[in-house]
Amino acid sequence: MKVGGLFAGIGGIELGFKKAGFDISWANEIDKNACITYRHNHKHTLFEKDLNDLQPHEVEKIDILTGGFPCQAFSIAGYQKGFRDDRGNVFFRILDFIDELEPQVVFLENVKNLVGHDKGKTFERILYELEDVRKYTVKHKVLNSCEYGGVPQNRERIYIVAFKDKNVASKFTFPKEKKLTKKVTDLFDDTADEKFYYTKSRYYKQLKEEMQNKDTVYQWRRVYVRENKSKLCPTLTANMGTGGHNVPLIIDKKDIRKLTPRECARFQGFPDTFKFPEKLANSALYKQVGNSVTVPVIEAIAREIKKAFCV
Ligand SMILES: C[S@@+](CC[C@H](N)C(=O)[O-])C[C@H]1O[C@@H](n2cnc3c(N)ncnc32)[C@H](O)[C@@H]1O
Image (cartoon, rainbow, N blue to C red):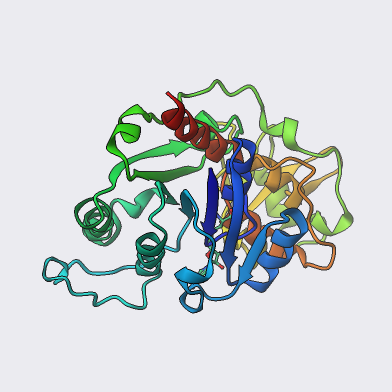
């Protein structure tokens, strides 16, 4: 079955589907740097442009449409009257692609609080558009990467899987939990390049006092360090590489440093064969990895989608 990817970023969703045995036909992404990393790792067509400028009839027909779309507020006021008062919202552009391509499956990923976003109105509208208007059968679940992806990262995301055929939908279940065998330290390199160390930071003294455990990923929160007591890596975020917020910090054999982009990618379940372009700044790589998905979680769901079509 063929997959088309919207909001592709560096292609974590595409990689998960590929690992589960699907063919990726094409993807779309607007961010120049994300496209550089994408092309470094994937061979299929990447439309580098604003989704609003990509026409649904321009792309090849696919069976599965995917997208980890940006979450923006949109109102439900008026939708029962068929109004589309939220044209600027990219979710409605996804609907244009669904209408043209009529995929068997629509796979969406988002932050956990999509359900509570704008007092529940956002999610209600999404369900209304997929179920009531387009007659898809929708299943959704919040999964934590440390419980379903085999990686020691605390990352809760909502996964929405919509099926055109309700018989196929009835055969689909979300993957079962799998035991976490990896510790955070298993994903650390022994040492890293000098630039990742905080030895010369004006906060070094404070960090030395507050960071004591070598088996912990700490998180710098602007002026203090938060310790993750559950021995998991805190949710990696797009802003972790810029400014002083959400930076994941560890103590390695040498000293205090941030996790490298490569280590962050491991916490997202990317294999070390996934390549980072040398010409990109680390800040861009942190953003790309933080914006991405936990690949093994996607793969596990994609395998269940495949099973639902086979049984
Ligand atoms: C949450 S990230 C998804 C990352 C992706 N799942 C991955 O594995 O890397 C959302 C992506 O949507 C892209 N995006 C936002 N608005 C867009 C638009 N109008 N057209 C195309 N891409 C857009 C952003 O640049 C970003 O890379």
